[in-house]
Image (cartoon, rainbow, N blue to C red; front, side, top):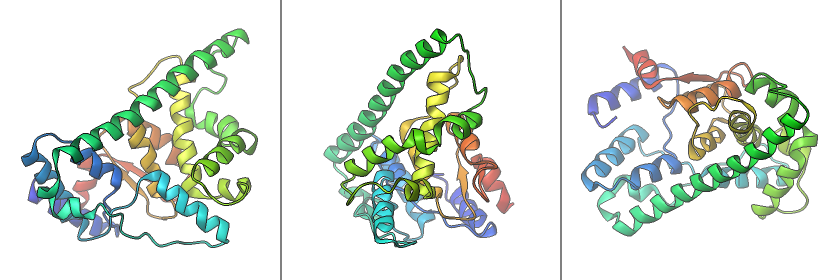
Length: 261
């Protein structure tokens, strides 16, 4: 993506598919943590060129908070406002070593916490299934999501906890939250990784925490396309999205860029 030619092809592919490239805070911080300032500036320049001055989408939890406020007000839409990170795209020379360290610490801490939770869950779940003489009762991530994970009786406690952590007003309206694509995508991304890491007997290449979190950005759009060469994210996103969310597609970078040829 550092090549201007590839950037033009990405923009052309978006135009051909009637899509918009939107920069995200997660992808921005992944670039900011790059220690080499020359490469970091090139990557930020690439993101800026493809973004065409569109504001950076906030971190996924902030998206959930804003959607929660919308639900509380009884509204159906809200407007994304600039995230205060836009200057990093257009003035990369202002990024200091301290910014780099903070971005790296934030992403690494989130991943370590994510890995730790899944490691503890795997021990508990595998012991439980073994005690009941069960292997994998569901046989696939999709069945696990639909039969076990994405149900009111299972997710109500999660929703109430998140609602409180995000300091949203009043008791969590569980049914309204479950009807929200943004919140449901967040929980289903988590659920798919729980299945892979805790239930499945063979661990596949794991998807990373911040990659899975970005499924939230696909909410509320009839033309949702996730483009990635990360096999773990491709697999989890396909299980969550395909055939379950209208208009969803999961593509490799070469497949997406090839649309403009």
